Each structure stands twice: as C-alpha cells, then as structure tokens.
Amino acid sequence: MEKEAFRSGFIAILGAPNVGKSTLLNTLMGTKLSIVSPKPQTTRHRILGIKNLPQAQLIFVDTPGIHQPRTRLNQYMMRAVLEALIDPQLVLYMTDVTKQPYPDLDFLRRHLRDTSVPVFWVLNKIDRIRRQELLPLIEAYPYKEAFAEVIPISALRGENIDDLLRTMLRYLPEGPRYFPEDMPTDRDERFFIAELIREQVLLRTHQEVPYAVAVSVESVTPRDDGSLEVTANILVEKPSQKAILIGQQGRMIKAIGMHARQAISTLLRRPVHLHLWVKVRQGWKDQEAILRELGFHQV
Ligand SMILES: Nc1nc2c(ncn2[C@@H]2O[C@H](COP(=O)(O)OP(=O)(O)OP(=O)(O)O)[C@@H](O)[C@H]2O)c(=O)[nH]1
Ligand SMILES: [Mg+2]
Image (cartoon, rainbow, N blue to C red; front, side, top):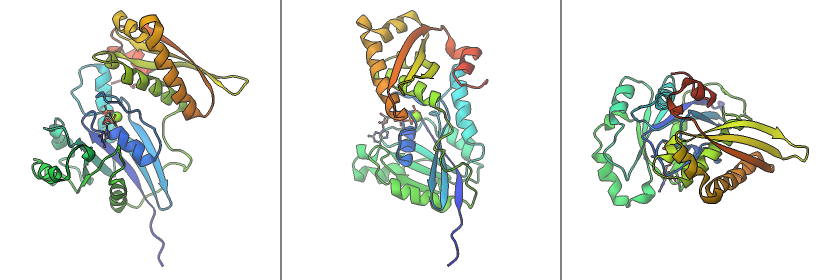
C-alpha cells in the first residue's frame, strides 16, 4: 500500500473577543496553553499550539479578538491578528451562537474575500442553545459563501472536536514537520508565568481594572531545594486600580498570588515562591518602551 503523505500547516483561529478561541486551542491541544476568562480581550498575543500526529503536524495560531484598536496596545493586538493571516493553510473563523449580530463581519469580508485559503465557520458554545435553534441561525448568516465548511462545536465540553479535527486534516496540504516534535508552543516559561498571573487578575477584578493590567516577570531563580523563586510586577494605570488590586488588608493580592502560584507550580511541576509588586505606570498602553518590555513589538 502506498505510504500516506505527511500533512502540515498553520491554522489561524480568528473571531470576535470572547467567542472561545483560546478555549478551543486548549481543547485541541489537550493542555492549557492560552489563558481563558469571561472578559473580552483576554488574549493579547499570538500563541502557537503545535499538535503532532503520526501523519501530520497542525500548528494552531490563537489570536486576540478582532476589535477596533484605540491604544497602541490594541494596535499591537490587531497586528497580531493580521500577522496570523499572512500565510495560513487554513482559517477557523469562530463565532458564539449566543451572540448576534456579528461585529467582525466587516473584517471577515475585507480580509478573507480574496483568499484562496479554506475558511471554516466554527460556531462555538452550542451547549448554550437548543439543537433546533442551530439551523435557522446558520441559514440567516449573511456571508455563508465565504466558508468551505460549517462546523458547530462546544470548545468547553469538547463536543464535535473530533469532527473538526478530522475535517481539518482533510484540508491540510502535504508539507514538512515545521517544528520539532518536543516543542508544543513557541512561547517560553516567562510568558506563561506572566499570563497565569494576569489570568488571576482577570478572574478576580471587574469594570476597567482587567483592561488596565499588564504583568512583567522580573526574575525566575532556581533555589537549591529545587523550587523556583519568581518576582513579577503587575502594572496598572492609576493609583485607584492599585488599591483595588491590593485590596483590604492585602486580601486581593494575596488571593491573586496564591492562585497564580498554584497554577505556575502545576505548569512547571515544582514548588514556586511568588513575589508580586503592583506598580502604577500611567498610560503604559501607549508607551513604546513599556510595551516592548512586555513583549509587544513596535507598531
Ligand atoms: N458555554 C460555553 N462557554 C464557552 C465555550 N467556549 C468558551 N467558553 C467561555 O467563553 C469565555 C471566553 O472564552 P475564551 O476562550 O477566553 O475566548 P477568546 O475568544 O479566546 O477571547 P479573547 O481572548 O478575549 O478574544 C470563557 O468564559 C469560556 O469559558 C463553550 O463551548 N461553551
Ligand atoms: Mg483568547
């Protein structure tokens, strides 16, 4: 029998904020790479998840949610979205079945109209509606001709993920193994540490605070006893936000630190000592030097 060809490619996961892109990345990878929260604009960077199968390598590209950029930070985020669209082999355009109309429809029309790359419409969160509501929803969509496939899923519950995976494999071209098999992502330890701290802030704060925060890891030092000592700064825009993050008698920062420490320790599989400092950096979202330090390239 003829040997089956090796298939590979970059698969961009695109869509409005909060539709479940990062949840899907984590479900497809079977491990948590990208932080998830109920707040829009959780993801700020492009993050690769590299999945190796015997006959294929799928390189998933999680991206920030499509939105109108108003700060340099947001411009950077939208650039990360556009960069994911430079040369993918497949695009997953994701929507949330509980949210309509579709705010990113214009973006889709503008950027995917002339592409020859197959675009799948992935309708997420089907666990939140009744089965009979699905078909009318698909039928009413104004731009169905853009899609090679329409696949309803629940990223959270893992529903229909096998079907999505099988269909993606059918569309992937023959290609090389782009990354070594022991490399599940392009991001390093420091990145994940910062993200796990930011995730705790996103899960525990409200209104403008989640959007005002960035995390930078200052040092990661191994100790003789096998544990790691991590020092990180949580940047905010105003003193009032600093007060919220510290909380009454330091309760908030303690809770953030405790949960982040557990998550980091699970990720790195060793005990972690975490020191957090909250610092006010007014207007950091528009300051090139700070953005660079936070891993955002110049825009
Ligand atoms: N019920 C349900 N909730 C989901 C599903 N997928 C994701 N969610 C929830 O939707 C919220 C947003 O999920 P994320 O994965 O962070 O969404 P995202 O598209 O990456 O968001 P941004 O990074 O902000 O663009 C979280 O509260 C998830 O738990 C799903 O299939 N069903
Ligand atoms: Mg995300």
